[in-house]
Image 1 (cartoon, rainbow, N blue to C red):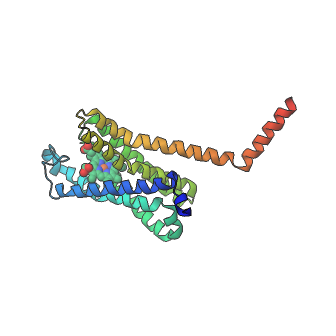
Image 2: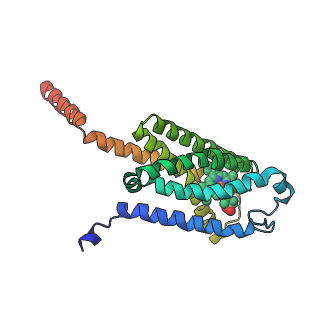
Image 3: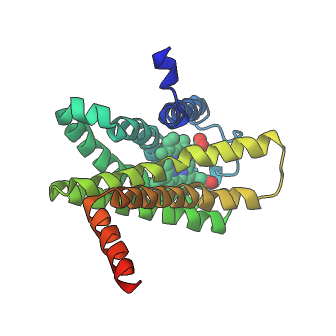
Length: 235
Ligand code: HEM
């Protein structure tokens, strides 16, 4: 009974998010039947035959291999429990993830953005996503090497939030398919919203956490005391 009482929404959220990421990653990988060998009748590859073998295939297959791997590694690396229990594994897998994101996922996403299915607005959204993800990973790496671990943690959390845009964009795409919504604009908006909105939510929640932490700190208590004695002196 005591155990059931401890199940709260904030406790459940990471679990539900992990399940959603796994579910979407599984569905993505299941689609690879259409990519190996390429089926130019499939949703994603139709109308791409004229340029597919002229270089696009390099970015495409690199992305197919590195994308799901970055999500799975990201889920493991973001876990505090895993890091505290297996610090050596955290460091080893972290290095693999850094190389994977910096040299495979982001560059291949950037190259594929040029040929984005829903046109130039989506292309710019995906390209900026690729650059921002690589920048967060680079900062995360740098701060780890400099042993600035609180900052390292925040940069890597940002990077993971950005990688999860691959999940968000597919959930939005799935919903649009279910309601049979035809126009291209929501897909273009999703290329931006799928990472900008989660990133904004992350930054906002971090701000609230920092503010709550500061309010509970001895320095804040001191400031409150000074404020109230200044008020008393004026009356
Ligand atoms: C930096 C992050 C990422 C960027 C910039 C990016 C970019 C892109 C772009 C531009 C496309 C082609 C979209 C189009 O033509 O409309 C694409 C397709 C794809 N991406 Fe990513 N991506 C990223 C992360 C991921 C992740 C984490 C996964 C893991 C599931 C993933 C899996 C795929 C797959 C499988 C495709 C092929 C289409 C499909 O089967 O859905 N991507 N990505």
